[in-house]
Image (tube, rainbow, N blue to C red; front, top):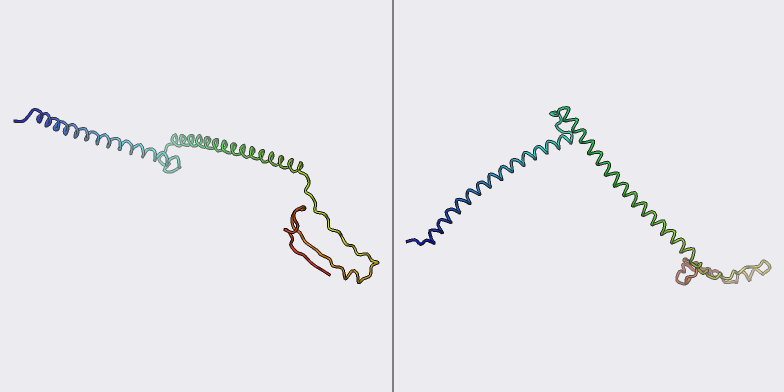
Length: 167
């Protein structure tokens, strides 16, 4: 004979299968209904979008066209307002940057004014030839000419470009 426990277990299995199959079927029907509703809403939104883009307007009445026009004008107003706001913010940021750069420039100019002048390299002695000297002395004289590139006061040996000896 079957025990009471086995009978209870068979009952649970039977009721579980029946309940779950009914629930699954109801869930499937609900999902199908939701999908159909979403498809209808999507089609309506796509039709409205096409109208906003100026497509398939042949079926629209004058009232619908006027409503679309009003909606588009409101949208353009919002778009232009946002664009203006962004441009104003950009201009303000650029003005702030300009002021910062001007202040930095002024600070640098002030620093340059307060800096001591750079030392000048001593001038090399200039050899002048007097007219009353004999010609042979002028020809016999050695002259060195050097070209330096760089700021005054720096080591001229590092910046020497060319040395010309004549004589």
